Image 1 (tube, rainbow, N blue to C red):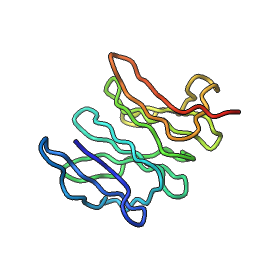
Image 2: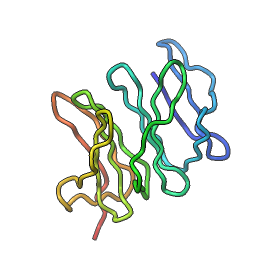
Image 3: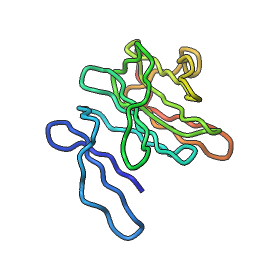
Image 4: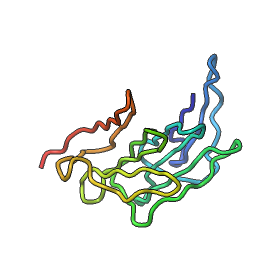
Length: 147
């Protein structure tokens, strides 16, 4: 089990659980500085992580050979809040509240798909969405914003 959390100076820290106890916190090796929750999801034997940086930029990384590696982030992706992330049908899916206040999603299979709106333009989250895959369906949940 993995846990990523904010440490001092908005730096990410990581703990793991081996089934019996939690590890000591270690610093993130990518130097990300964030103010929002970080989303993590296993996919095809790897572990993905996405976060919103201090200036609304999006960070992606993949756990590989005992280290976090930067992963591609499409140009222009920005979010006003933290992101949701889930693995579904062999692909990681990310969900974000765009600067237009609408809920966007995209999946990764060698490269990120074009971001699309969830439910047309009906989905307007207040803050961070969360996502999960269960029994062949992908679920996203969020607090709905008032117009």
